[in-house]
Length: 321
Image (tube, rainbow, N blue to C red; front, side, top):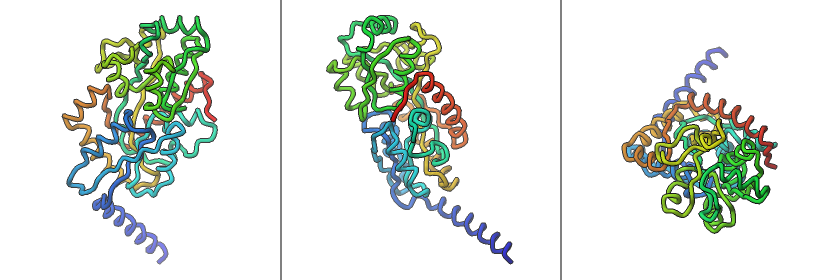
């Protein structure tokens, strides 16, 4: 009798999950972005919000919760109900780098989340203030060695790929530049334009338009190969630092325990959106390479990224307290 009750309970639970997935969503979905407006994570989140299928009958509300290298927003989602109505635009920082950088991370990068969709990746673009007397990586390294401890690079926060790109550059080039963390790129860019900081390893989608407007000078991209969006800009690796590679990636996560049928439904809708021709064109112009991997693909990819960035952080000696 007890066994029968257990079996019936399991069947009822499975039936309820299936029914929930079929009716989901019945209210607006909150998509948390761990950085302020304007950067790549925000652009991707707002693309989802703008293109959500009208047949769903609900909206996606973008909720920017910046701070602590993305940890504030990530922790918020990790502690949210696992019903699919609060999800996260995760980044390489929140889900790969921060585990090695912070001694006490307020969430577990793997155990506290259910992977949904690996959306896109992008290289960072090394940009300098127009008054800095360098036009390539070799000249920048020479300047850094001639003026040790004086060149500065900004970032949207400790633990971001922008920050760690600078740490990796220091380590591989044998120089020491000063990291200046901000609460978002919107706060860093005015200081860079005004000459208060020397440079920044900014995400391609936000940096490229400023470079093309002539307001900043591009020195190199952080990917292993040149970006199709800006093939005229050489990689840092080909300018004297072979093996240099530091790309940003963006993926949607839900709280751990979110029913797989709901995860699959969210994944299918995100894939539909980023396969739209106008969205694909937008991504290319911004320097974002769409990937659209499924939940299991994202889980495997995240594990390899955690290992990779733990070594980069350890080799650089960078720490966040």
